[in-house]
Image (cartoon, rainbow, N blue to C red; front, side):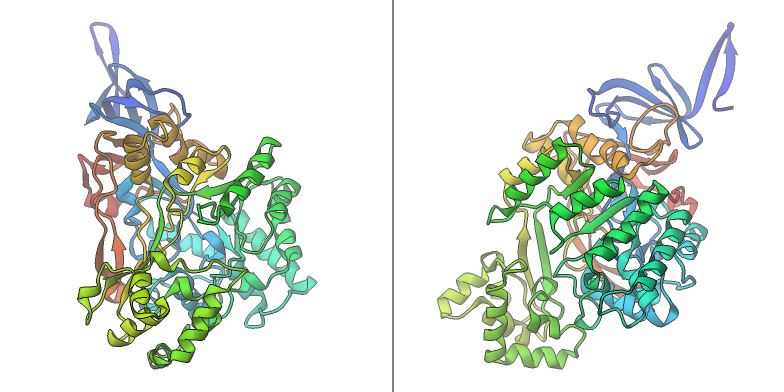
Length: 562
């Protein structure tokens, strides 16, 4: 029985397990909100209306009651094993995450390639090798075995994952991946992909980004794939008639992406459509809009947050697009110190970065000193201004600081998406999808897992760029539609009871801070104190109540594999 009941003077009074009372229901469809109670029994919403009763009651007076938010672009593939709550996403109203983006799933993986996969995640996604070595149980090789390992341990949020091109290519080709695959190898990759999809992968992800240099400074395996290989693998999803294609295109032409989605008949999302000073994003937006009007099922990912990195000079990810910086990846710190101390190396490295035509150039005017052990007086100072005062290049200032600080200098830099008018334009562009939180990745450099609260606080309440209904749809219903999730992303009778209750007048991401709580004492940035997030439920189980995370939710782990 979905409800408990009792009889009072001949009237049957239905009582649910839990009722959220007095809030404004915004259901994820984009339609107007309405005052209503929400009744939940088990893991499902059983009624939405007035005067509902429950054995437990959550007060939502003055709050919005919405579907739990879905984050389609995370890298929790490893963290899920030591942090089943998937912090900090769980603090911000997120109830469902998708990992494996950009092709960086950690399965399939043979034992002899575990270090390579970990080193790749270290270099591309700024995951500490120490944390990965201590935290991944490595009791799996195949993708089905990986899903089984996650399922055995349980997870607090709902968890889905793409199977990654880099992982599949390494699994099939071994160390000989720096070439085009032959027909037999592509055929074997198709078999591995099919096995993963049939086991429950949400789709297939790949990357061609020039910034994605992985283990030992080498381009990641998927960057060596020919377009024909990518297309042949994508056909698997069409043949199975399920799954999403996720691609970080790099030099892969957008025209080819949209044609590929159309040909295989599956949705495709690509990252990222972000503002840049050149205005190139406008041309991409125009191309997308024309394709969208013609029915393309392709969804570029946009974000409400500027893409700002805090980089440590012993691993400056944004600069690894330059060959000289890339050559230092994985090298001893003594090699890096020697390079940074060499004026000729600095001159050549600066020239490589400043004259690049196939990759983003550093925006030196956005580089500022965030932390310096020996030069605290320079914190907050702009590198371009410091360089101008001395008549040198900003890279000279940066490298000299790094040598003085023994590579512990921290520099803030903006990569893209810092034009408010441009962000407003992209957030309202039809056919885009909210993405690129990168939760679980770049953990020492950024913390954009607070994307949902940023959208609601900055772009809804403060700037009025979106209505509450539009923003909730972008965070829930649109995500579920892209991912083809059943009974998630919408607040309606019969749907899974993933719910977030927030105060629209105070919701905000809160401060970012550094912790040392990952395996091996590894550091990370987190945002664990948002404002305005009152209650969060995953499959009917409260994991946050009255603004406080519930420790018992970690033990119960109500999340499901999707």
